[in-house]
Structure formats: structure tokens, C-alpha cells
Image (cartoon, rainbow, N blue to C red; front, side, top):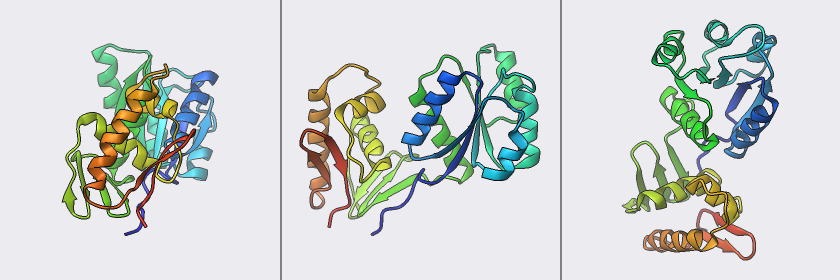
Length: 229
């Protein structure tokens, strides 16, 4: 069975005036497999929508010149892209206004980048732009249903093992370091390699109960999920 694409190649547009945040979002979403374009304000939004045809726009509410709510209307007129709004406004009234102008999700600053990536994936799955299932050989991971099968047999995982497998599956074929895994799966910035080793070992055993090894350790580098030969 072939490996099924997930975020790979899905175009996104980030409109954010804070250069540090804009760069961080570009890196995080790019690392998640998306093709990311960025704008510092809304002045070139129409042209960028026509040029890149993004599946989703991450849009800051407070921008120089035209602001978020007005730009949502531009997105709606010009494309079929979903919209995730970023804002420092946290009141219920502001959130209702955001949803009232047609955003698909709303995230208040400050936020954890991993949460934004997860919300982007969720919005894209709801819109049909991103499949909810990831297939790696005979392994099928259904994120929405939190269900995993291998060779047609269910694989019962803990919530942490499932998060680990989803991260590995989204980056299948790539060697991921313990630091990368800790940051994305646990949200840790500190080094705790034993934590990763323990969960990888447990996950590997459960996967191998239904077929040959597909979760490999690359000594000194990290871990990689590959379809079994």
C-alpha cells in the first residue's frame, strides 16, 4: 500500500506584521509539511490569493492599514480558502465578531505554535483540503477518530503514544531528533531523551505485533517511521 500524502504540498498564506512571529509561523507550518507564503500586511492580499491559491489563510486581526475583519471579506470574495484569525483581543464580543465575519477558527495571542498547527490541520480536515487519515504502508492513522490499524487489525495506543505516532506519521521518512519530538509531542524545551525512548519502545512493540518493523532508531540522530518492505 502506498504512503498517502497529508499536509505535503498544501499551500498556506500567513498575514502577520510581527516579523519574529511571522518567521516562527512560517518555520512551524513548513516543518509540518505545508507550503507557506507570508505577507507583512494586507496590501498585497488580492494578488497573493490569485497567485498561490492557498487552502487556508492565517490572518492577524491587528495589521497596518486594512485590518483582519476587512481582509476576511477579501478572502471570501477572492478564494475558497479557510481562515484562522490571530488576535490579542480576548473578549467574547471580539470572538463573536470574528466568527461573524466568517472566520473558521480564532486563536488569541499569546498562543503555543503547536496549537496553531493542530488547529490549522483540523480546519483543513473539516474543509476537505486535508485527509483525516494518514497511510504509511499497511498502517492507517485516523486522527479524527483517534483510531489506528495495521494490516487491518486495531492497534490500541495511549493518548501520548497516539500523539507520538501522528507526529511521526506526518513526517514519515524523515529522521526526527528527540528534541524535535519532545517539543512537538510533549511541548518540552528541555532535554529528556529517556522519555522519548520509553514511548518509542512501547509504540514500536505495539506496531510490531501486527507486522515487521517500521519504527526505526537512527543511532545518534533520532527516530524515523517508514513503510515496511
